[in-house]
Each structure stands twice: as C-alpha cells, then as structure tokens.
Image 1 (cartoon, one colour):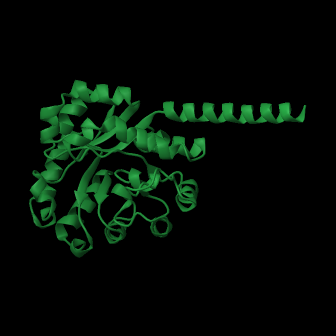
Image 2 (image 1 turned 30 degrees about the horizontal axis):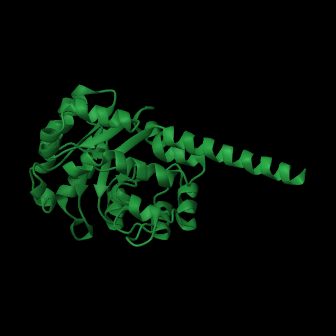
Image 3 (image 1 turned 60 degrees about the horizontal axis):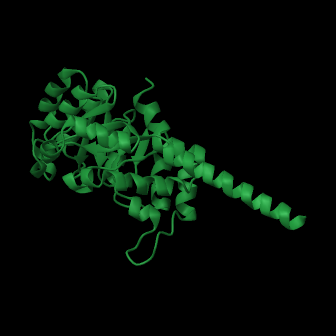
Length: 282
C-alpha cells in the first residue's frame, strides 16, 4: 500500500509540475525592447510583425527605431499594441557621437509634438560621455514631458541620469554592461524607486549556456535577485538586426525557459505584469 501511495504522490507532483510549466508556456509576453528600423521594414511588413507576435503570444511591445519611421509605421498599424519610443539619432553611425550633436535635443522636442511617443531611447552612452551637455538636455527633456528613458550604458550613466533628474523613470537595457547579480543588486539598492531593467540579449547567460555544456539554468544568485526585485525586471528580445526577427520565436522560447525556473507569480511579473503597470495602467 505504501508503494502505491508513494507512486500516487509522485504522480500528483509530476502532474502539478506539468500544469505549472504549461501555464508558463502560455503566459503572455510584453516585450520591452524591440527595434523596427530600416532593414527590418524592408524585410517585414507590419502585418507580418503582428503575426510573429501572435504566434509567440507577445501581446504588446516597446518599439524604437533608427530612423523613427519604422516605429511610427508600426504604431499607426497597431496603436493599442505598440509602445513607441523616440530614437535620438538618425543613422546607426550616430550611436558613437550623438551626445555631441547640438541639434539632437531640439529635433527630439520637435518630434515629440506628434503626441504619441512614450519615452526617449534606446540611446547608447557610457561613462566617459556622462557630462555631455546634450545628454543632460535629453534627460531634462524627458523630465519636462514625463517620459521614460531607455538607456544602453553602464551604471555610471544610470547614476548620472538620476543625479540630473531624480524623478524620471529609467529602463536600463540588457541588464547593463555588468550583468552580474550582486552588481545589479547594488545599483537597484542605490535607485530603489524608478529604475527598471530589461533582460534582452542575456538569455544565454541566464540559461547558463557556455557553448560546451547543456543548459544548466538559473543559478541561485539569479533566482534570488529576480525574486527580491520581482517588480523591477522586464523581459525582451531586442531585434537589433533582421536576423533577430527571423529567429524571434526561438528567442522567446529561451525567455520562457528561464522564466519557467522562477515561481509562477514572479515569472508573470517579469513576462508581462511589470510592463503592463508601467505602460498600460496610467
């Protein structure tokens, strides 16, 4: 009898585990870092982008582009589904020195008159340029209009943004330049209220793939960080090239794989709920 009871017990646990994994596989995704730039527009029409979203159960997406035409086309095609952010450079070559182009802030202010942009970015900047007057002007512009900033940079840039405008909200791309649990924890502790972090392009790291071994999964340190700061992380794919659109489904599967290793309520926050609160519940 005891063997039967144990068998039933383990069978029940396996069923519950299977149900939990199925629920997580079906949970919606709110992608908080995508691009739809010049080459993407040529390769995929807005209707095709929506089909990609549908099959991967991506309900909403934060989009920025170089140039901004792609973002605007996608937003006008699906305004209830797209969160448009204003890119601050006109070509990809401008990534290096946009912060020394004195026309950037004025052009951004003019573009914001269209009335639908929700944030500024993604912009690339690192510690050596943190005292740029153009960068400061961009941060002050976000403060003036109540816009979020999506920053691709190091922790010094995050510190500088909050030094300039303590009440702005920042979405830190790619878990920064040091995607280490203890380091990210220290930055979140310094900025406890308005700093959010997207996980884009870090899925291989989180899955523990090193090129030689199979997936090992989230370490205890990553799990604890995501649980302790479950309201501050947002998942994302980051379509930095056309190939990322080509492999979008696969990247989403990787995201769901490491999310499945977290408690379900935490996974739901990272997958969708945190972004929903930021962008849909105003």
